[in-house]
Length: 164
Image 1 (cartoon, rainbow, N blue to C red):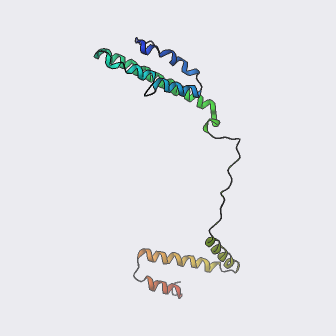
Image 2: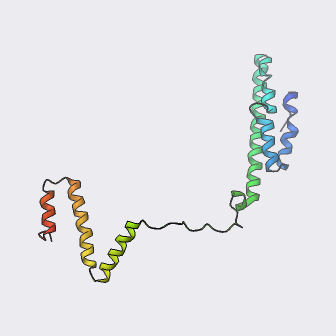
Image 3: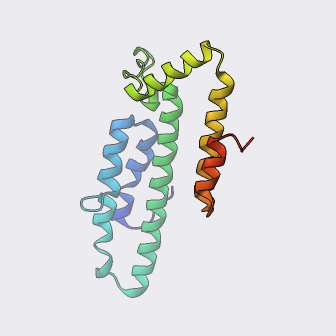
């Protein structure tokens, strides 16, 4: 980047040229040291802005913004380089660790009993009646959902075989 003509800003240019050689920790520290809200060097230089005349303030502000954009672009480029160099290991995934174990737990006791009952009926050859029972439950639920007035008679018809 070319000199800005302002000593406060030109003093930061060597730090801009040093960014491509920084590692991740130094890059983070340099970002805070340059662009930090409270104690950043560029922020400190911008505090002198009100002391300039109106026309000079515009030029200084424009140069400061141009320098800030150059810093941000350099930081982004270096972070991209570091991320590409880190590869999948940089994602926080430790490939040397063992895999996750299976979840420890068991089915609810009522679920186990129902499953055992269904299995007994299947062994006895009653799979068709089990399926019919599931159909009945579904029909009852649909009748209640629709709000049929004859839900009670519908249940009696199903229970006594008139519904087939």
